[in-house]
Length: 315
Image (cartoon, rainbow, N blue to C red; front, side, top):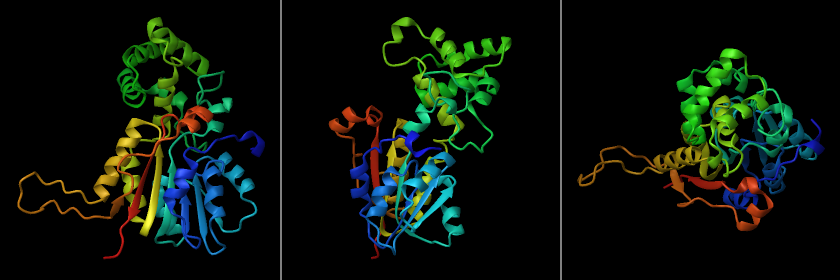
């Protein structure tokens, strides 16, 4: 992977760096390292005693990150998934860290690289795997999931109004031949949506998003991942998470509320009986959104939301 071909604009970059409240000698994790856009700004603020741990499922991204950070010796690169953050730290003999950043968006490189199959523009084999070593890909889902499963994915992960019709037409197409390329899938989707509903972006956008989320299991483990990240924060350590999808943001928000120790007892009880324990506090009561300037310069930042949590201080 050539560094020149890996283009990606880091979203809410300054807001994330401010939110992490970086200590020069601290240990920080970029759990979605990508092309090292956020990582570069983190490590610039670390002394030689500090440590940056970069995690990514995409080996191409890690290769680019290594090139861009080749002047720094205090970086550890991990080919893995931030969902496994506790086991990753255990393998590194690290108990707690000073900060964690998760940027849950797909990189511009992955979207634009035609042979990865993320894009509905151009033609490529249906793939969409962030981690090329995993077996489940978009082609398997499109050709093996039943009609009900497909419709559910398109509706829940893509908020697609015509999810049932698209799923039904995929099944009908499969009876004649296997669906192997992005163009074939785009054509099926396009024919499933009435012309009057095609004026809000590309007709395949929502379905491709939904399949990508399913391929990479982006939603289901997220709530637990947020809790696990909070568990490994030092006192006053910061967790910054950027989401791009309403389901992601809901999972992050709810996990942070639980970790803050919000009482869930019915109103009117004379004392708390739910056993709520605070692991820290939410820094952002409302998510931080990109500025108009950032949206104008990077349209992919439009749906981004940043939430920040701080680990519990000693009493």
